[in-house]
Image (cartoon, rainbow, N blue to C red):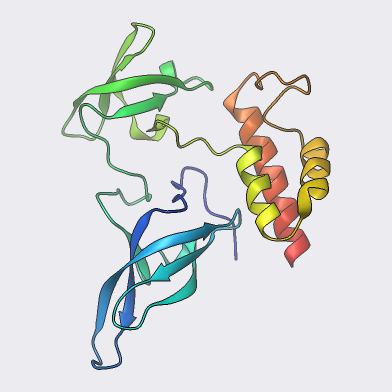
Amino acid sequence: QPPPPVGWEWPREGEMIEVEVVQEDSDEPEWVEAVLKVVLVDGWLQAAIGGADPFDDWLSWTDEGKDWRRVGDFDEAGRRLLNAGDRVEARAGGGHSYYAGRVTRKHADGRLDVAYDDGDTEVRVARSLMRPEGQKRSAIDAAANERRMGGGWEAVARRQEDAGSSTDGEGEPAETEEEAEAAAAAVAAETVAAMA
């Protein structure tokens, strides 16, 4: 399966979702609450599904909206809808780096006004230029998922060193979000290729 598209909001382990299941006593499918146990870098998710007969199952990001759905409000791209008061990280001026702030207003067209923590403000920012605070996906996240798949710490360290990491090699954060995302993508691609 192809990897999730850029901009797809990754669900988090422990997040509540709903899964469509057919119960034994009924032929009709119904939505049942489930909790994500594992989220892998290639978009596979393991969920503990509740209901009359609880069980675990694997789901794919490609099945979102068909076999599983998020709890809450999301747009067509799978991104959480944001409202006034929500904490976000936004790419100020459409740049590459993300800055923390708070949504101050939501416009009818879905664009948002943002007050950044440094005192700057921006109006009518596209949703595609922001994410809920804390939603960063880094090479470290990808490596942690790889470790769960059996790569071991040595393989994780080697792949991070080969692909780059979310630091500059001296323990300092990478200059830009793009560097961290590129490193995560490289680790994810190598992991998916190794699994094939």
